[in-house]
Image (cartoon, rainbow, N blue to C red):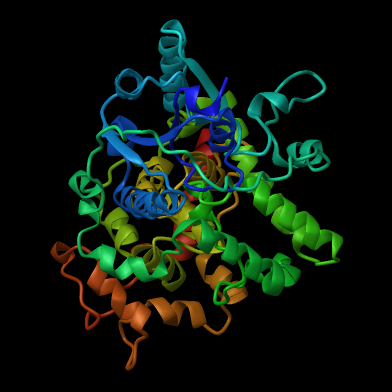
Length: 475
């Protein structure tokens, strides 16, 4: 069959805003006919928090430009995915729909229904791997069970072969007539960010080229010291790639092979980097096998624990605003509001503080991060919060309560990080610290001239309160 006789293939774009190592695009291109990339704004998109939805909008705008550079485009449609795709098949005569797999329960169920409907109507519907390196159902214990602890999971996959990333297609054949699409600006994906968007935007590293540059710089300049530098919160010692991985602007396989090359070159921190990539895999593995990770205590014995779910409490409000009176915690929460991200060491400290010192439910923190993070990832966010709270798989021991004072002394000895993010009481606060007041909602009525608050709970008293609550549950 000549190439001109091959009917179009629709590529359903989701969290895979790249060209390199994009199996669905490659397969569509290899079919020989026109390729029609489409992004669908369905209920899952509408349900996103403010920062991830805004960041998605930026990513889509950039990705559309990249596709245009290949002589292609990105069709935007709104509605239930099944209906949108069936309409597009009817309009374009497409005989195949390809997409990259997702693993959260809502997406899995949606994709199953889409595949059933398309197949029943004679359309080829095929999904491809790429958002993770190891498909969750392919990693099992010797007893045929899924892994519940990270270290054995790491040992099981570290020697596996990860396919070499496929190069980007050089061109994508356009259809004779593009189907009508919607305008991205009409979706208003950034509205909930309000004035915070202008503050966070300079910290965004947008698109595939920026992600690959990030990876290259990290492997050249930072990976050797990564095992230690990743915990020094005042330094730029991490890769920063979580932002790009979350939207698939770079694939985990690209990162993995770069890490392997660095390890083979004798870079000391390369294996630690690979372990962090596998921690992300572990989160997806658990989300696939136990979807309750996203919504309920992973360990059922925690169901009766007396966490406080009242988000209106003054203590919880202070935590969200970075006004707890504990500088290390407050600095992290302000970094989150200004940059859309937070150093991983500090994430653990602020999560421990909410769930243990304040006895706030981990779901409060999970939802707040889901609203504020530009690198939000459903699996990693849920696992991180349940790990910190003690209710999750491979969790930090429930009786371990991070002391935010000693954590600051250990990882920010000279208060460089704290001083960067907290303005109150300083003669010359940093621009980053002042930016926080430009980003937060005006109805918070916060000013850098405010007095720095007294602690909402004494650190030692908060720890004692948590331990007492644990003892009464007798885990």
